[in-house]
Image 1 (cartoon, helix red, strand yellow):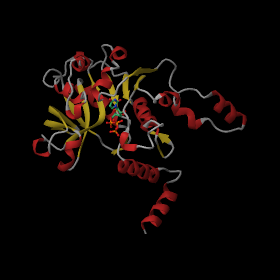
Image 2 (tube, protein in one colour):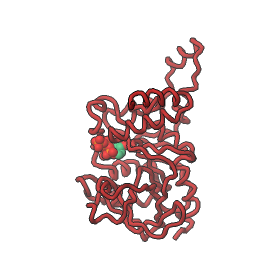
Image 3 (spheres, protein in one colour):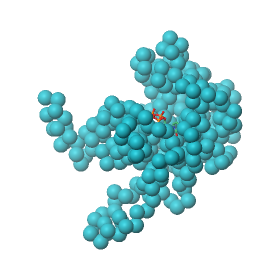
Image 4 (tube, protein in one colour):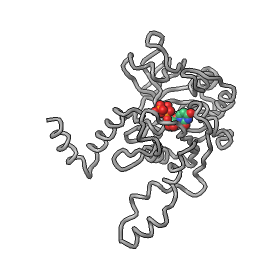
Length: 293
Ligand code: UTP
């Protein structure tokens, strides 16, 4: 099933950033979780960079109360730039924060009713085009990036795609899990999807990990989607209804994934990326060895 109508180019991406970030309190009381920096870039910046690399042109942020600073991060900061220029400082570090005027759109999710509801809030901007979704608290680290790998697979099979990774079976209950069908390289056919299953009922240990390419029909399904696991409107439940109706595959990301929604995952990301950085890796390695020693 890879009919041409499910292969329109993916130009738009939704970034749901309206969640409360309760696992990171008190840090996230006044600062959105998506602006917490891993080394010197906020989480949202990693996601936007990954999107740009994959050819995304339009960035749709689903924001809520207290999240305005995320949008401001992508504004031009005249005073800052003028002062830096007057002092002869390079503006290069600001380059990734530039988004073509008109290509950043925000929509509001007034109440955080769940990921599915957040995505549905972007329906008017998405219209009848396929779109990508990025959960910025999942930091996907690799080259090519996760979405670029997914777009490559999309160009082949079209339809709907999720990125997956394997976790120990006892961890599956915190995630969306796929029932895998036929496997070919990094591509796996998706036969079923279930959100936060009990270990005994989980169809596999392949969890959905924060990146999606979906066809616009999912918006109609979300409109009628009731509450699911955890009392939230779950994206997984509407995606599951597309299986068997449209092509649906999973892509196993060739790279590292850090769960920056959790404190330990956040520390892991910071350490791994700092160690990998040409400008500081060696110094950080020395410090880490000393601390461990
Ligand atoms: P999470 O469940 O990881 O984020 O949702 P959270 O709810 O902010 O975090 P905790 O559990 O309270 O610590 C994944 C992504 O979906 C967004 C979040 O902002 C995050 O980027 N989200 C979640 C919404 O935009 N709206 C929602 O109603 C729920």
